[in-house]
Amino acid sequence: MPGREAMTADKVPEQHSPRLEDQLCFAVYQAGHAFNRVYRSVLAELGLTYPQYLAMLVLWECDGLTVKAMGERLMLDSGTLTPLLKRLEAAGLIRRERDREDERQVRLSLTAQGESLREKGRCVPDSMARALGGALESKGRLLEQLNALRDALLAAAEPA
Amino acid sequence: MPGREAMTADKVPEQHSPRLEDQLCFAVYQAGHAFNRVYRSVLAELGLTYPQYLAMLVLWECDGLTVKAMGERLMLDSGTLTPLLKRLEAAGLIRRERDREDERQVRLSLTAQGESLREKGRCVPDSMARALGGALESKGRLLEQLNALRDALLAAAEPA
DNA sequence: ACGATTTAGATCGTGCACAATTAAATTGTC
DNA sequence: GACAATTTAATTGTGCACGATCTAAATCGT
Picture 1: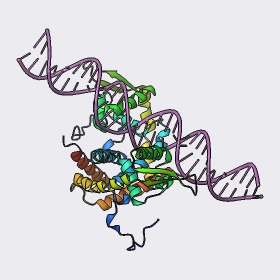
Picture 2: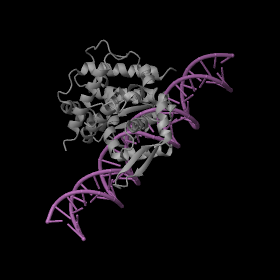
Picture 3: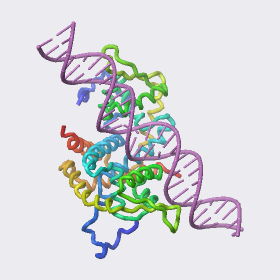
Picture 4: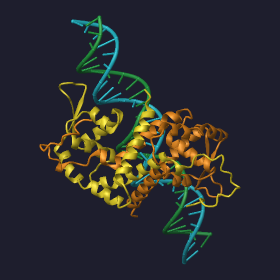
């Protein structure tokens, strides 16, 4: 903890820019990176990245949905999802096929391999819980606050 | 809110994969995206991205530091910082020069333009606070929890 | 029926994040 | 003083995120 104590008067703090440590955005940013780092090693065994894992979670939860539906669930657009889904397809985990009813949409479905990966994926939450250990006092409350934060930001972001 | 009520017995939930909404990682992930979105519009006026803004914050706080020092402050490696810093240099905001004492290091310093951007940047925290509105009950507590979360994850991540 | 609008995805360009590798300078040790 | 080990950045390659633009299909209005 460098330079925290003894705010002597020689360094006048009036003109200071906001300190990194005091900012929520930075805390969220770093927590996100930290999660990513842990997930990287946990998911390496499954051959997935974290966003790919999220996509598989959605698909395990609801097979046969469209790209748009997945995009809404994950709040990602087609510019992000299309290449990600192509990689999952190339890995043999999912199929992407145009809906015959409405050819605008692309339906996503699990292959047998994608199904079976689900079993291997079951231990992931346990691994993460173990990584977190007892560091969290109240996960539920933290979750609520983060979601409130997200909603407030999104509301401010799109005045459209 | 699709399919939340009436968990009837026909769909046995025993085999469910973890729900997205219940996961801390997802909440952090989405809050991060939301922050980014708001910052994008707030920072557009300064011509900065959020990570670039962070780098400028660090530099405003401590001019003349090395790439390594900034990397430690932001927890980013040179693979991320080098191109980012080159963009800031190309924008005329900073200088990157090898330390004459130790030619391995690159010292970062503000140009006059980078200094003056500081003034324009002062309103950024206000804009963000306005975007957040009163959505937050206790910022301090949330900050603590996020930092605890980060530290626990990092501790688990690098057993090295 | 048919032109205008809307919708779903794909594509392209920019920028961040990180692992792995490389190169150069410095330090420690003999 | 020579040389191995370490330190510091840069480079390369892969993948995510998103704005902007494009194409094709479906839908709407008259």
